[in-house]
Each structure stands twice: as C-alpha cells, then as structure tokens.
Length: 231
Image 1 (cartoon, rainbow, N blue to C red):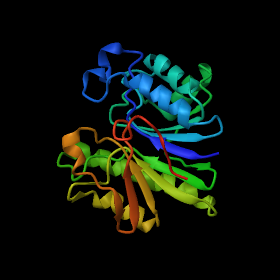
Image 2: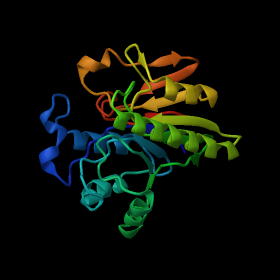
Image 3: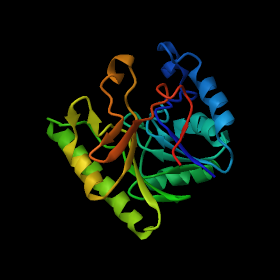
Image 4: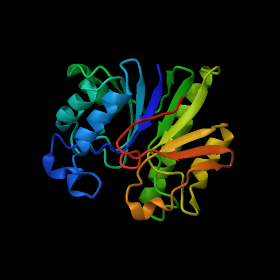
C-alpha cells in the first residue's frame, strides 16, 4: 500500500455549468483525472485530496462528484478547501457518505488518520496576513483545528506526522507565521498544500525546504492531473 496526494479536483459533474473545462489547460480535466488515477492508484492505496473537491454548494448536490470519487481505486481522505461550500458538520458528512455507500471517502477535520507509516494531519488553513476581523477569526479557528489534528497524532508516536493544508503557509515572500510556528513547534517535516493554480502565480510558490520543513504544491493542474506518491 502507498500514499498519494492531489488537490483542487474541482469536480462539477453535479453542475456542468461550473466545469473548469473553460480554462486553458483544464480541457477534459475530469477524464484526465480518471485516466491518470486508474493508471496510478491501486485499490490498496490511499489518496489525500487537499481541498476544493467539488463545486457543489450543498452536500446533497455532491452525489455525482462523490460517486465519481468513490468509484476510483483507493481510499480517499478529504481536507476542506475554500470552495467546498458543501462541507457542513463532520457528522452530517459522515452520515451522507454512509447513506450513499461512499465507503472509500473519509473527511478529515479536528482529527488525524494513521496510514501505513504516516499519520495524516491537516486543516484548511486560511489567507496569509488577514486584515479583516472575520478573516482573522477564521485563521485562528483553522490554527486551532491544525493543532488539534497534530495533537491527536501524538498517540501514534511510531508514525511520521505529515501535514496537509489547502492554503499555502508560504506564498512569494509572505509567510503565515502562525501556521509555520505550529509546524515548527510540532516538529513537522513535510507539508503539502493546494489552492494555487494560474501560471502567473506559480512563480511565487514555495517548494522545497524552509525552516527544515519540506513544502510541496499539489494542485491538480500543477501535477498534470495525476496524484503524486508521498511514501
């Protein structure tokens, strides 16, 4: 069994009007995701999807997108993204998944998930250096969720903790010090993130080592619509 990751699938089977096909480089992206996924992932593997899974606005409207995901090989662990407006309470999501027999999909919130020799931790994160009070409150909440996730991983002291955040902790020369401090204090050595898409923005991404932490962008289009192996 291997562990992979990818983010920002932006599935729109439930609402074709929101398809990413209209953007350059995203043509026929759902088929690309399917083809590359089945070539890469085996039923025993796990894939962490780091946010922006579906364009659906309500949980009940995700059915076609989740059916697509559920039919792909492997277990899927979901992190919330900024466009996942369907994401309600974790109880409602789990009930919805159970009711629809989407047995290969697991949401991650305020928790951790052991997986092979890794322990999967994470949260959505938020924008760097928020100015509005509402954004400051959201960032503090996400920091709390990240701390909770990492803390729960302490009981798996034989596993390596790896963090996934939808928002990048570092972008260009701007650093989300509050998130970075949590990673440093928790002795996290690897952090995978999504959210960044356009070619104009990619020149500002942070990849490689920073403060002894390895950072990697895993957005769908950046990875040519193919999950990458992380262990």
